Length: 200
Image 1: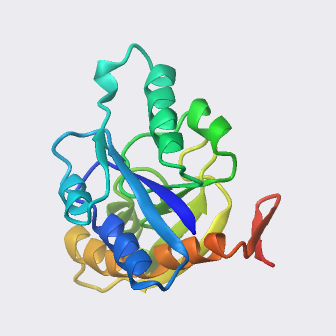
Image 2: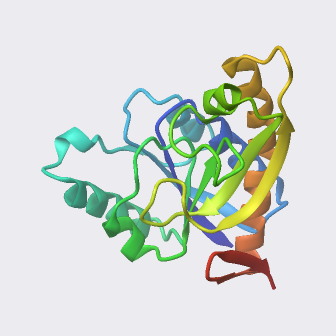
């Protein structure tokens, strides 16, 4: 059974999708702890409803990023976490977390990376006039949305789409592919070769 730690900053809809898939028994994993950098994040209540420890570490309460991340690492290790999932975690992961969990941190991003990294990916897609966008689960490295890609799902852009309508359709696909990526990892099906992630 793979112990997962999930880092959030907001409402936690991807967190919910992961919890539900784990609890259904579809993947050999469980959410061991949820950590937020925002005390008002809605995802904390989702965790509590499932009796999952929900912890808040606000960065402003620490002297620097390294100290902040060391506290997160300590909490993750206390709960036996083997895989860290970012689910709407609105901070760039630093060297401390990366060193303690090498190739064991994954993220979901609402675009077909490497297109439209960073914030407001859905609006970026609309501004560029693309006809297809989507979402990507990837391993986390030192960059912003630059790590090796695990799985992607395409979402057509409609003529009358707004950032909100496009975001909602992409989110549905996020809820679908994030648990699949976790399943691959839980069943030890992936190997990283340079920038490529391959199924064993």
